[in-house]
Image 1: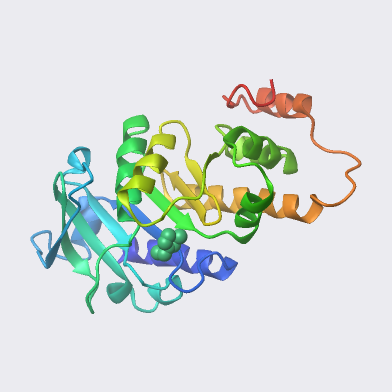
Image 2 (image 1 turned 90 degrees about the vertical axis):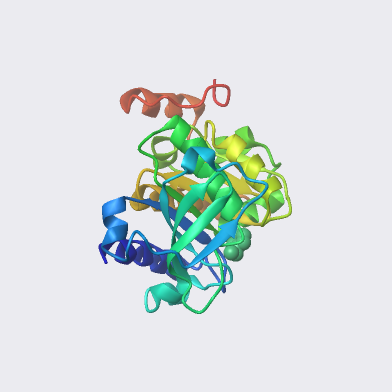
Length: 264
Ligand code: 2HA
Ligand code: ZN
């Protein structure tokens, strides 16, 4: 079950960082039909989950591995069939469970955000496959002390370390505090995913997307590392830093199409 092993391996890494306490965080991954067929019958039909407020029409026929609501990342590797599910999008509002959630339960409470973000990212990039949500400590800390503005966050994170602009040249989007676990925050997040792969939820955490598990995970690691450096130095006397011109030099050397209007 290579598919399940790859997913639970990443979930364990996220847990070990301390970004997924208790049942914190959730993940969804577009699986290929042949990958699903290695885990269960494609005709399996265990249960249905209905999302009346979400338009999933562009996702019909797609398979997702998706973490379960209330489940702990800590436990996924040793018991994937209880903590994860494999679903297929049956119609614009319905998921069919093919495998998993063995002791009951349903997809993560953030399923609306995951599914709406998948639809948005796929429209931008047909190779997109992953949505990852977690609670990175320093990034959450930043949302208490930095104005909740996407350009301000992006500029700070870019200037904390050379790698930031290389890894997320499009910057990060920031949403104000909103009630989590519903369609409203899902729609707000998906709207940002039009032109970002990373969306910060104030006083809550981070959503990152990617073409594979490593890309989404690497985005989270790099953003959180920059936030950690910021929280380490924010109240210190700064003697030198990365300038706008330095960032432009990096962009030129790496041929980056970085977001304009922040350092220009
Ligand atoms: O699944 O992280 O945002 C628990 C959460 C909700
Ligand atoms: Zn969360």
